[in-house]
Amino acid sequence: MVRILHMASPILPSLSTFRFAGSSRYGVSLSSYNPSRRFAYLGSAISQSHVFGLKASKLLRGEGTSIGVVAKNIVQASTSAAQENVLEWVKQDKRRMLHVVYRVGDLDRTIKFYTECLGMKLLRKRDIPEERYTNAFLGYGPEDSHFVIELTYNYGIDKYDIGTAFGHFGIAVEDVSKTVELIKAKGGKVTREPGAVKGGNTVIAFVEDPDGYKFELLERGPTPEPLCQVMLRVGDLDRSINFYEKAFGMELLRKRDNPEYKYTIAMMGYGPEDKNAVLELTYNYGVTEYDKGNGYAQIAIGTDDVYRTAEAIKLCGGKVTREPGPLPGISTKITACLDHDGWKSVFVDNIDFLKELE
Image 1 (spheres, rainbow, N blue to C red):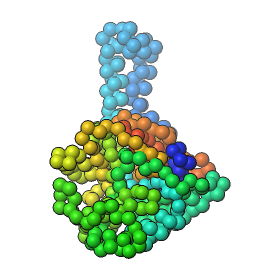
Image 2: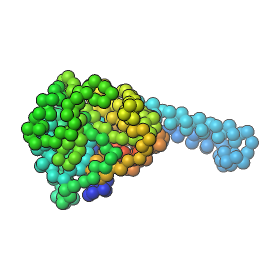
Image 3: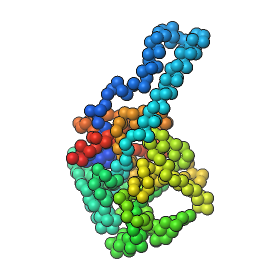
Image 4: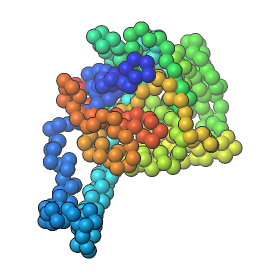
């Protein structure tokens, strides 16, 4: 799991969330990692350099004639092909959204709200007194097959700033009105009564948890993934769609513009919305920057290879904030990155993740 640092500091690697602070973190299987493979794509370019030797290197710097141009083109073509291979691999990688991590001021209070009002189950809880934090994992099914929430409580900190960039979490329910009635009966806060979504027909309602995080209730039929959305605001929607498609291997499931209300949304994910958790990106006309606060942390995503994942992220203009490799003291491999808007994601090795759950 991933462990969240105090206040505005980034989350510590606690595997659960990636499986941050828990028995599971973010990982990649070292058993399948071959250091030479990581640079295999440079092989042809390197061999060409050997063929031409020192003189060729001068030519590549523009100190020669047409031979230098040819050699330079060979290297560029080789590098380009390697980059295309990495991005093509991303599309075939076995990826799934594992969990979302954020900070809360009173763990027991939040657990009570999620279990009694939202119908979640407490999957596990872990206290790390030496590092002064506690994690709790909640959701609607086992972590090895469902998208779940990882809550982080840092000792002595009872309030966080959610900011304006984070939007909401989405939960699919069969009857929004009945769910709202239950939440009210339990003393929960309803901020939007049941009704059709602006510009659409889906019946929704909004509620807030004790820390002010918003949950959108969406009326749907039975689904294997009730915890179905994480909504984040971005400053350039087309740029974000391009990044998440290429670097994350997500599919653009749908895009809807609402000029009347001056916003556009894009649903990104690894499968249909009615069966998988998705990322809802929202662009508000004319707004390019938001305050992220210090409450929301990150999303964890499973991958078969964190090393190739990091290469793809760099190729697509993302910022790798933690180079791929095993976490200190354990074998779980992860890599962490930021998108163009500064939203953090952690990729965890699929095999290592499952081992942690054991």
